[in-house]
Amino acid sequence: DIQMAQSPSSLSASVGDRVSVTCRASQSISSYFNWYQQKPGQAPKLLIHGVSNLQSGVPSRFSGTGSGTDFTLTISNLQPEDFATYFCQQTYSTPPTFGQGTRVEVK
Amino acid sequence: QVQLQESGPGLVKPSQTLSLTCTVSGGSISSGDYYWSWVRQPAGKGLEWIGRVYTSGSTNYNPSLKSRVTMSVDTSNNQFSLRLSSVTAADTAVYYCATERVSLSPRGHYFGYWGQGALVTVSS
Image (cartoon, rainbow over all chains, first blue to last red; front, top):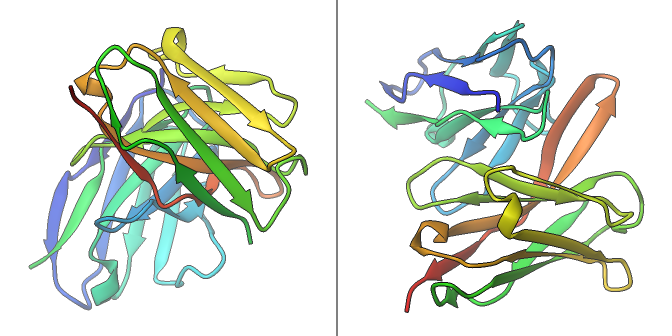
């Protein structure tokens, strides 16, 4: 299985901050890489697919970059509704695997 | 817009079989637009892909669970199902059904629609 190492496991930030979450795959995964947001008691929600493609309806303050094995989710101008847990995922090979999650908390 | 809803017992005894059904609305399970998947999440932990079933009925399972998992699709009722046998407390989790979409442009493969999740507790 391809392992996804996500960092940090948690971070504290304030509204208006710019925050970044990184994910490293154990092997190259081309562009088969996605980011999800999950709020307590809710299902994960697709934010970004194919490294950098924003899912319909997702605010433009979310962006994704990266290639090969290293990927980054950036949230610019953090909003109150953005405090949540973020998961990365590879779908390059079966089984698809997820990072362990990054919890973005209020500072 | 596709909507998914999990249903099934919330409590299963150890060594028994967990059974869940996902009902699809807003689209046909036979459309071929998606693969139909199950993902689980133990409380406070990460996400684990369990497997997928295609409209044809063929399946792919996570090797870590393969010996205990069976998935099927019921096109007449627009549903797909998960069975996990010989459960233990380690199988206690929220179980999600989700769609997998493979995109050619832009190239990608992602889980676009999710059910709200069903908590299944394994306990005697």
